[in-house]
Image (tube, rainbow, N blue to C red; front, side, top):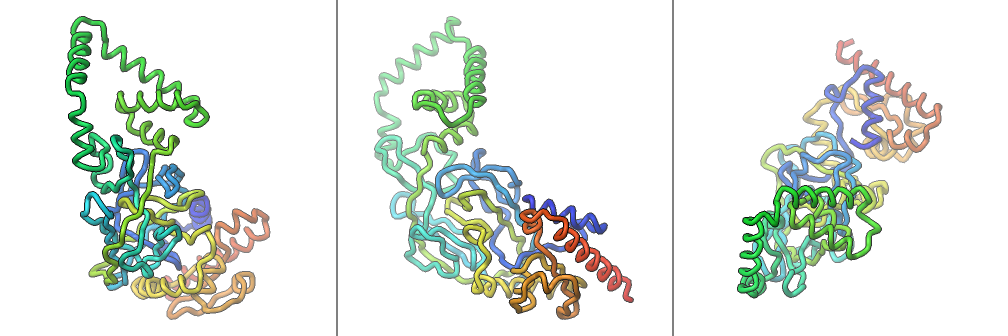
Length: 386
């Protein structure tokens, strides 16, 4: 979790509650299957394995830190979802599929667009590569992105890359083999020297080097298997490229069973690459408050979750969640500090942990502490049946 999530944990612990005893949910939802792969310096990794502080590739072609991990949450059976299929304009025509909740944003024609509004033929940003033979950008499926021996866009370029100057390659191979045989090349010493030089370059920082030093680091990473370093260097040299993929299909479906929800928040660029497709944070762009239509789109998910959970006490954090649940525009300062009937439960509003971090004064902390104590007393009373 991010700083706000860590503060929430401390707030709960202050009234003898752990995260295992509460169910945390958001008024605005997003994704996602735990198997969806996110591009990181270690290559593609399942979203369920990402943690705060990990680096992910963003739509600007740079690596940024994960600052937020969505709390554990379940998407109920029968919930609406969108299955998007994206196909490259040329090259590998096999489409990429991704299933998300309707409000999850993707980068369409340079603007963020929720999945429910995506139509067949829309142009969606996808992670591509640059051909090492002809220099053309082309689409690479996420399941092949890091498994290729050569970065070529077509059979023609691949053949040129493989078969060009076979005589020169054979001469070089024989020369190096002879040097290893007669001791002129010591593989252990070469590897040790290369690793030492790589550490020196990394310790000096990845940015601020001249072009020749950058090329040297790339060669060392390429020759001696430093895969993580190679990907980071590709980041700093502008090696990650994006191009348009065409939405082949956008289907509105219903889930046949309950699914876990996964998503992350990323600093600055607020995006990441999921299965090769440029995707937005689980937060609205710019970390703004959700729009009324976004809250309305997510309301059925929240209602279904509450119907299944049958909570005794609901603690709403911040004005957005409180106003959405109570259907009011009253400020949080007037709503907090008292019980609000909510079906068979009661709702107790309080300040959002992010607000408390931005306003570290003791008065707001004291009011939040009183709200938490009220929620704990009401929870204990209802659990005891009194």
